[in-house]
Image 1: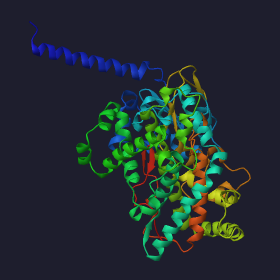
Image 2 (image 1 turned 30 degrees about the vertical axis):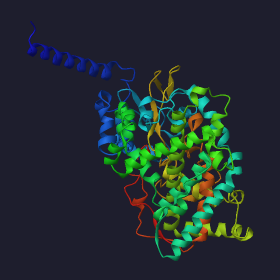
Image 3 (image 1 turned 90 degrees about the vertical axis):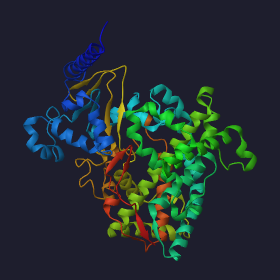
Image 4 (image 1 turned 45 degrees about the vertical axis):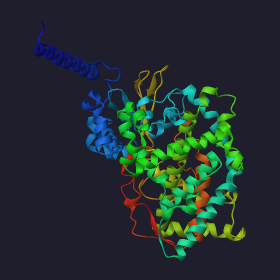
Length: 520
């Protein structure tokens, strides 16, 4: 009879041999073994987990260090800042900003390769999409062909023509925001303008998605909302869910008494999912029309009426996931960009003076009611919006693409089939080679004869780019113009650049600050 000690010994020995085999294969025989990068990262994904999960979303910054260390040949290591960040760059065969960042993924830091990577018909990678906990949404769809089908209703509904039709709804929400801010000014209150923008963006996108909103602009106490807590809770879990995707379903199905123990933000996230499911169900059963028919068709009407989507794509749970991604993305990124713009305009008197000088004639000509079309003609306002989008990034995670059918080529490297390859939006929009003084707010960089528009990739690029780009631009141009022109005495209150500076990647960028507070 085999003893317990012998069995344990065999088990441990087998595990050790298996681990040694995996280590040798990953280091020397993997299809990407030839690519530069730290050996520890090649051995285990715990290298990435350490920086993102345990150090709180710091991999985005560590990647820059890896590119400096491994992406340039050793002979140039002492001069890397000089040769990489100043013109002219070295010959391409000497500059290789590609590194292996885990056992199966490559990362590229080259703004000129961004469109090549993202504008082709490639799949996403499951590790990236696991972090959402919303696997059936468009944003988390892995196969290119399935994404293409799911995306069709979004393309039409978020078109520029549709947003122009929707502009009066945006304007109505903005009017409510201006009225609320006037009331708070009369009360001499300090305003968390980032929370005010969260209310504005959420009310707009909810009207767009469901034909109704929670009226946070009017009702939220000091603009603090459950949706702000819910999104914070969701983004805080991104890296954990990526590491342990199996835990998502059990957590979503926890009983309410357990949810209440986990805290206010978790309760807000749980309630957000339930509320979204209820709103989608009302659209599906036309219950909302029995109360008050929406003034416009919603994105869910477009999905349900789509001839290209089979019935299996129109289930309540899948559409609930779409609802949360549309509302979450349409709230957080827009509010973040508006907060970034407002801070830097108020912190830079020259920028503020130029912007107000451009706004004054159009406000006077229209009796204080310029339309979206009027504001879209203003070059400096557009430049301010572009610069805010550049600095606020939108999505901060490295976005993987996988080509299962063809090898990819980067400079003199051949990337094998099925190898996840990524770039980071932040590394493009903060590239000192493309944007001199990248951390400075310089709207004039967009007013030169050949502006670097190609590198403004805050909404990504290609068939997977954010469909809400036109809605975001409309909201930003209207809000910045009306808020900054109406409240020309607005000043920053106990707010510094660190309060808006990106300091962590939680899928979306996060600062460690208190937000943007202003006195009106």
